[in-house]
Length: 215
Image 1 (cartoon, rainbow, N blue to C red):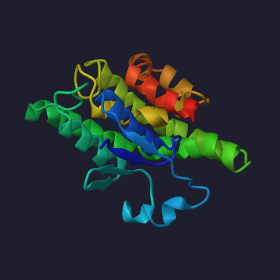
Image 2: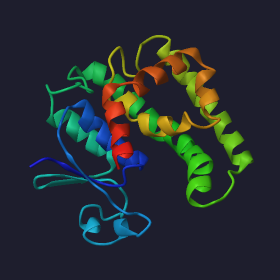
Image 3: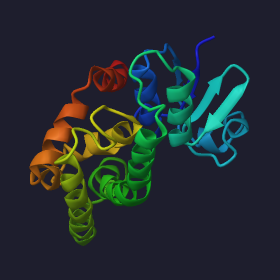
Image 4: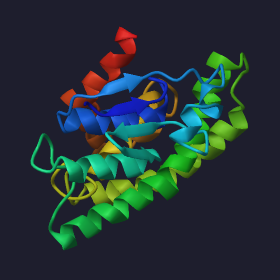
């Protein structure tokens, strides 16, 4: 049976799981979850993720939650299929792990606030973004991307010269930022801008976005 990903098609965390499966060329089933109706806080979803957060992943009798754990499992489970995404050389993988941590602890907390202010509030809450919060977090993002700019001046991708999970994990939130004023923060840094354009144009990511259009 094909693996199943339970979660809304537009959720950044769910998109991360879709993207890794697309890169690995693994057929899977997307199981929509209606968060507005609170399906993620009820059974049977809670049996898959007791924290009531998306996504959840099923592969036979294996059940996983937390999108970054899901991407790591898929990358290693399907070694030799599709894009590798991880290294089996421990020193190379150590560099990837550093940037996986950077994305999770430095990039994502800032960009998630920008996604909320610039997209979720106006689209789903009928509220205007708080311009002070946007400005503050764009400045914080600029400081983080200054570090990225130095790194990307030395290698094509964050983990080295090949596309890995360290890059893939940025895709969902970055995609949403490209339709907001925050895009200018990326564009202001030449290496970051080139990297963003490169990874956002990957065929596997285009397929992930196509899932939303089909829905």
